[in-house]
Image 1 (tube, one colour):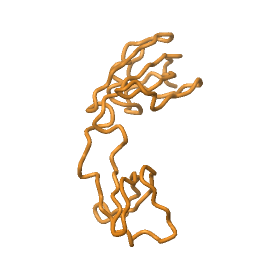
Image 2 (cartoon, rainbow, N blue to C red; image 1 turned 90 degrees about the vertical axis):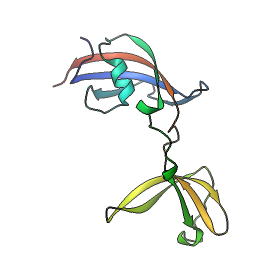
Image 3 (cartoon, rainbow, N blue to C red; image 1 turned 120 degrees about the vertical axis):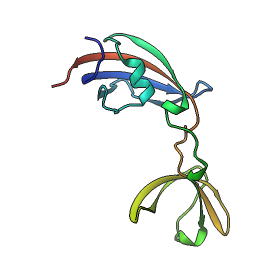
Length: 146
């Protein structure tokens, strides 16, 4: 059976940045997803259309179909005194912050970019936003969804 809309697909993958560094992988057990439902990256789903069990593919995906463009509006300056003194803020680490969206509180993951005495610079963009990625995929099985 070929991968098509509503097929249940099991695959393994490695995801690599532009420098060839592996930035994510499924491990040996792989992942399962329902094809055509937006459960995986758009560009990867499109490239897998028509593939069969046992097939191995290398798929290059542009940033627009991977993690989107880098959004400068994803940078936030937050006064340092809005964080408790006992909280250690280390550049490069991720924290969860609460923001208001349309009057409702919403949790948002952000990476700490810089910390000084008066403010903290946070970046809510995905670490691979604006970057192309390459997937090495092996299709393990393709079945009809039950």
